[in-house]
Amino acid sequence: MSDKLLHAPLDLDPFASAIPRVDDALSRRINADPESLERGLAQLVLTVVELLRQLMERQALRRIDAGGLTDEQEERLGRTFMELDQRMAELREEFGLTEEDLNLDLGPLGRLL
Amino acid sequence: MSTTIAEREVALVDLVDRLLGGGVVVAGDITLAVADVDLVYVQLRALISSVATAQDKGLLPRMGDAL
Amino acid sequence: MIELYAITDNPGPPLPELAPELRLVPFDGLAAVCTPASKAEVSPQTLWHHEEVVEALMADRDLLPVRYGTRLDDEAEVARAMEGRSEELAAALDRVRGAVELSVRVMAAAATPSPPDPVATTSGAEYLRLRAQAEASREDAAGALHEPLAALARESAQGRPRPPELFRAAYLVERGAVDSFVAEVGRLQGESPGLAVLCTGPWPPYSFADR
View 1: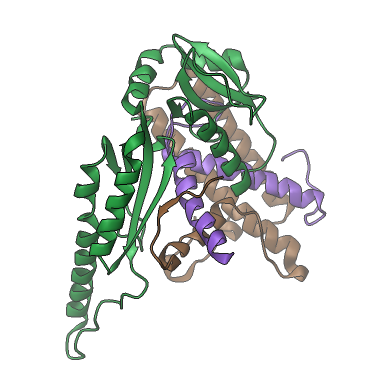
View 2 (view 1 turned 30 degrees about the vertical axis):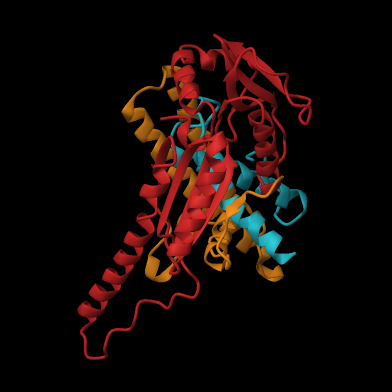
């Protein structure tokens, strides 16, 4: 893959700071203390999955309101989210996590969900 | 050597923005025609895959058919 | 499942060999370029590989890149998805014909000191006001790069800068004008020691493909 940088400043550091965010978006590495790995890992992963599920659901509803989807598409969307919601509930139960457990406290930034 | 890695990673930021936020939008399976949600969809699939992988590796208790 | 890469003219040059599974689904003088969907999880590697394929196509033809991760059941579903869109897509393809996309992002240069600390006697509100002013003038300086660059491009699309970015935009530049565009970026960087200017590309016209 040829170099995509056509012009770069001598010091790439200001741009390198954006990289951890991309990493978060793509990375599947999760560091956790081995002892609490299971539950902590599940909590972290399920929290993010729940966040994304909610985001997607909200976007889907907005899209449906805006119109432009066929009945079949709306039906598939609805069924998909129903299934996702059900899976989330099953996963939470599996790990003994409540909905509140997935609402991580981010301190000054507030609650996640 | 480290310069090349940094350069490639910096270019990755621009690549991700484009691939996941731009391009022609085609009504696919669950792909929605809203930029942010497409990004979310790809991430969601990756995360769901990763939970399944974590399960395979014995990092999580056995799950049912849910996932 | 089928994964989409791009929309091109049809007929066109032979498909590149680097991706032997590439197929065309034709519709109304255009074609959707696709492969069987891979099972790989999303990663920088899969993204770069996808990009390689699109750029190999772009090397000898004009195209509209399709958003990454667009998957449909089969070629029949691809054909259905394209129904009624050929006019719109043909117009979009004409818009980007003969051009590529360049990305420009601007940040404050690493060595730039943070906004000068106001005198100790100023109030908190005054401090914030001074910080906001300094920030605004940095953003203005970054935004001032846009006009001379836009003048060298067929089209441009400013994005919302993500802090600490000061400015970001995509430019649709004639294939033959990329070098002079990059030279202009270099010149503007030289005039702005307080800014760090990054220009990447050429990219397929992702930011100009679907309005």
